[in-house]
Length: 350
Image (cartoon, rainbow, N blue to C red; front, side):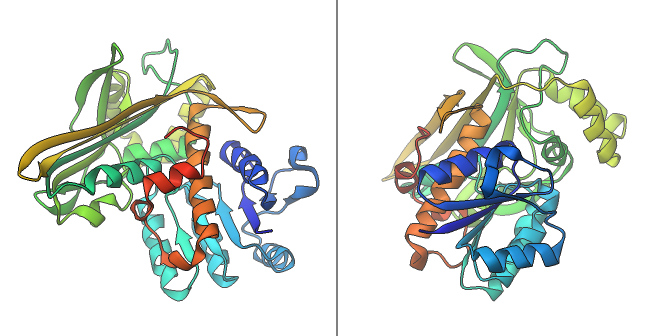
């Protein structure tokens, strides 16, 4: 039986734990906070306590370390994986962390696989699946958002995931492909409006969601962007807060403000919209993937749409790598995974 160590027992870690248990892996979970739900499978350890974590890993000898901690804690778990020669997976969207893990991967023959969640993650896998059949591509537009089904505040938003990650996404530079060259642009730009299922949405540039997709296809794609989906009006209020009031220079304040002022909801909807326009066999073709995901039952737990899509994609990638370890060594991009293969490893209907 393969053994997996999950770091972080929060919303995503909890679902990941139960999915992997159902897949018949031996799973242990570490978190600095006592979590009685996991019983004998849980140990309370701060992941920054290197001696205790090292001792636990030596005792448990996991085949993989799965990092479900916030993005700012992503580097240390990857270092543990390299040190103890085990596979590594995370759900971070942070660009700088991805670059750090790429450098670490030079010193291991195990698979280091960041960005395994929703965006980046399954959106990168779906995007690559759409791109692969084109001879040349004019435009790739990747859009994704997790929204409250119901909202009454002016932002038309509620907390559905990590507030630290949300602020990071709104403040950091965004990677795009412009005329076959990768460049960085400011977040919150290039606002677009569209209607899906009779509901109006807006989308705008945010950081991290495109992962490594841009670098993988820059030579083939003329234009590529990643945008977050929100209800109309959200972007303008966030732009005012971040740029005109200077909130982007006070990220800790923003995190505390959002956490104290915005409601938390489990009634969410995840929207993925990916459109590819280009040439195929001498014809101009457009292919798209558009889908909404809602809450679903996973291993006796009613998971939110965010939890289901993030954990479902992550666990599918884990299963594929552990089933075929000879195929995956070093730094692995999400777009290296075949969508049809990933679908076989998950109950989420991607």
